[in-house]
Length: 167
Image 1 (cartoon, rainbow, N blue to C red):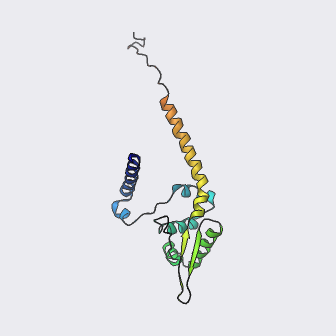
Image 2 (cartoon, one colour):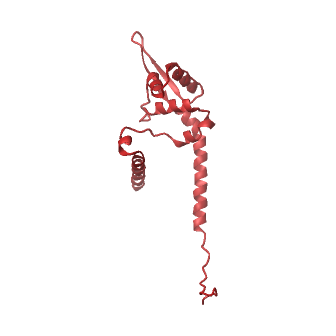
Image 3 (tube, rainbow, N blue to C red):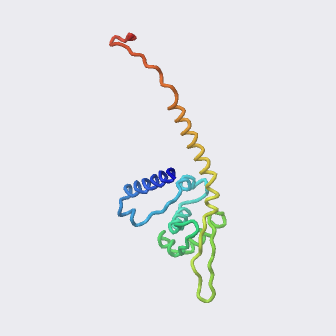
């Protein structure tokens, strides 16, 4: 139980640091928790700037694992300053074909359609090997640092002002 308390405190401290970094007024408008490894490995994943912006906008509406986001392509296009929603539709289709996003269409008869639901299981699966690699490297660095710190320090020899060993 104590470990959970420490973890919770660390999470609160991290949120507080972000609030201080961005200012409370800006932070109070909302924030998006997005894994750094996806940003770092964007090129390796084959995602360009527009893909990343669309993914960021989709994830901005995803707050709980079991409650997937469903923003409209119109709202994404407007936020990105795109004149055509078709650009967003094409990119989301490609993201789905490439296995990054799963789109569930919600078609209705007579009355139109609800916005699509989006899932990120494919993106998570594709980025996981990079995350495991980074975590392993971090662990190796931490172990090397711990080993370096654990080594015995050299014995210090006292010398007098003339540079001779003191007894």
